[in-house]
Length: 490
Ligand code: GTP
Ligand code: MG
Image (tube, rainbow, N blue to C red; front, top):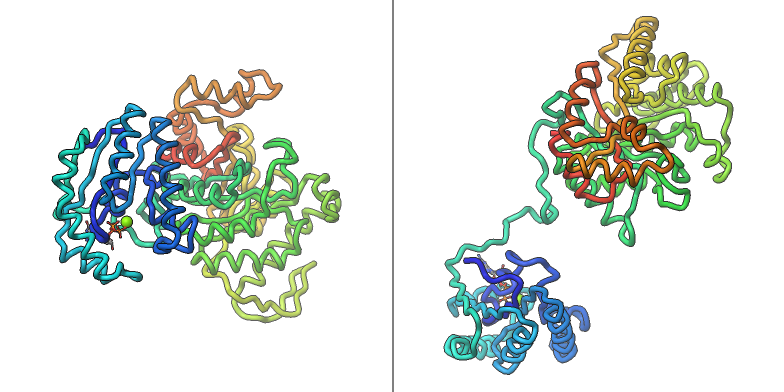
């Protein structure tokens, strides 16, 4: 049965009849104005009867305001008071909205039983009085002039989805193997570099991560910068500390791999990174990865009083960092001696849940790719085809040199496309994002196009031997943008 919408919907029925449940299964939270909920707002809780007068005053204000805007309004009270009902009916008429009464027709015994099962049951005599009034309300409703009186019998199946309690409303995690790959054989990881989270940082992050899980992304990667980098945004835009942020995301019910892309070796001693990563891996049951690089941006180091040694020293640090992390993650507590790194013991608890993949970021052919070949599980380079082919070739050569099977070092790319719903939308985004770059050049550089266009390109990347794409959106605004990529990552 479809009820008119927008409309005023007045619920009618005794305690325990199932009014709130019925409304929650059909309407958005914001559309339901509940006297119980408002008692909780102005009083100590939904059952604070001393707060009733204030709660009802507020309820009338909300109902009038919503109806005045032509918005669907579901009034969740007992609805047994005829004067109140008639006032709401008149307000709907004044607003030109249809007025619907929904009468919950629930057997008395069931109401009593549900009432008794509650944390704070309504006293039995009070419920008895309600049941008596409810028995007579049907006739009254028929005479009051409602556009529709909809009777809900309890045998009408409840529409509230039976979800596991920790699931988030509207979040359907993708089923499938743990190693999530797209139909093209790629792992696609969402790289988040901008955080337009408005007034709700945690809520925004959460919604983006849940959307990534639902869309089928294999993981979520965060940049590690102390100041937002000019390639992404303005210096005063937020850029959160990644390990703290990943810790929050670890608490969500997803199967996303979580990690950095990339953390510069200069920010934290390698042992401390090893500790953070091991903790994250333990908390997530083995979903942590560490993207790590030599660091490049002098400004953020200066601003935060972090030493920024020469490129050669930073590359030494990178090599040492990977050795140090691996030593601390390995089982046992024995001393470690590896060239420049000398650890008197390697006591590290919690232990990681599994082998934490180390992704070496940067395409420096002489050293970075060498370090990746020697010590990395993966090597992250740019996604444009010419560069990619060249880097893969160099990486493989280094692997041969150091006697490592090239298959052990996965090739990953950072891909920063402009993705539109259709051609026109892609172009509108190019216009918005291009800054002073000529539109055509920017569109080419960012592979501006639809999801289908990106799919064609990803097919080619897979053919070239790419294992994982870190996909970042220059104009990521929120979860919708992430969900829109489902066909690309699934
Ligand atoms: P008050 O707010 O006290 O006036 O009650 P209400 O009419 O809003 O009832 P509510 O929706 O809170 O439901 C009361 C109890 O019955 C809750 O524990 C619900 O989970 C349960 N309930 C409501 N509708 C259904 C239903 O259709 N099927 C089942 N199995 N349980 C229901
Ligand atoms: Mg209720």
